[in-house]
Image (tube, rainbow, N blue to C red; front, side, top):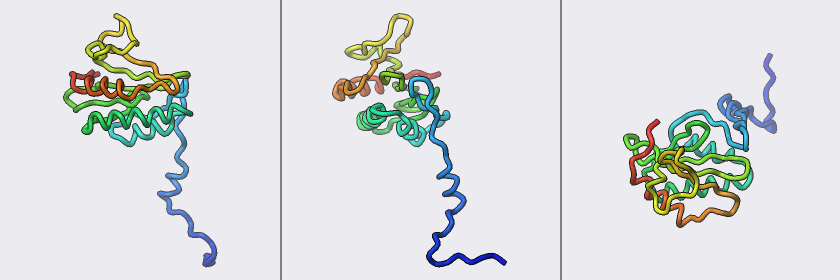
Amino acid sequence: MASRRKKSEPKPAPRAAKKRASKKAPVLLAGGNPQIAKADGDAPVQEYIAAMPGWKRELGERLDALIVRAVPDVRKAVRWNSPFYGASEDRGWFASFHVLTRYVKVTFFAGLSLEPIPPGGTERSGEARWIDLHEGELDEAQMTRWIRQAAALPGWKP
């Protein structure tokens, strides 16, 4: 005969809740970059940002918020273990960021067309240019200008 639960005992968790609770934290790859499966939408981007280690998580939150403020209809996805941002599906991706050991690299795929041109990149980088952000280095005004400019340009289509 099945035993009855006493009123003072907590109810067992539903199966769905047990599955959620047992979900593993994302693996951190080299340099602390979160390994997040390829997916479209805000949820995988937020999962990536939540898994960013240390001070980089706050930077990821600030970058994401800047992009959403500057481009309200932004399209988001995770590709190659990095958040990607696009102005629309038919225009491609305009920016991405990636966690490395000592900094977060923000890449603008049409960066050579931005004013001023972001400092990272060479002739071999094609149109892409980037900026490496170390702890406490985010210039929100300049980043917002780059984001707005980049979102207005044709983006990268893999």
